[in-house]
Image 1 (cartoon, rainbow, N blue to C red):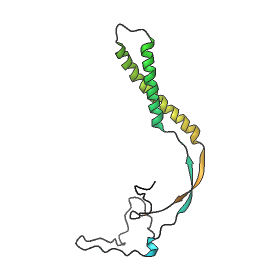
Image 2 (cartoon, one colour):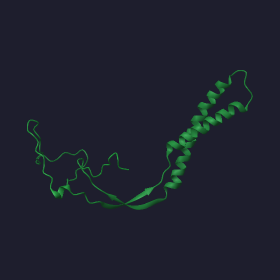
Image 3 (cartoon, one colour):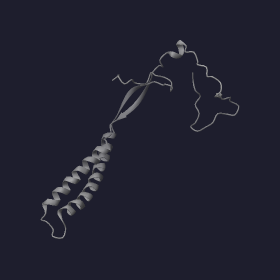
Image 4 (tube, rainbow, N blue to C red):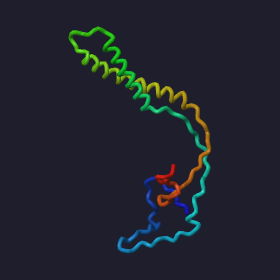
Length: 143
């Protein structure tokens, strides 16, 4: 059974009849024939797969490095009589984490440009299922 393709958001023509279910009438179940119960045929499609870095990991690593640099800078210099070490650490932590997150994202972008150029062409199986099909779902016990 083929569904005619329509652009997203378009409506069927006025002369086409759309079946409407009356809530007062019982719904009849369609009998399942062996032709409709068969599993769908997979279609092989050629796709390009490329690797990309995980940006959130790079940004978290940059934040940790920025916090460590703030801690080192806090105790590397002699204590200031005007400001407590906690205040100095808080300010340096704020600045260090912000700069670390930015540098981590920048490193991830650069790596994405370098590694992302190389794409591998593979053949993937594409199986079209309908919402009522159970062929594409995985049960809790399956791994």
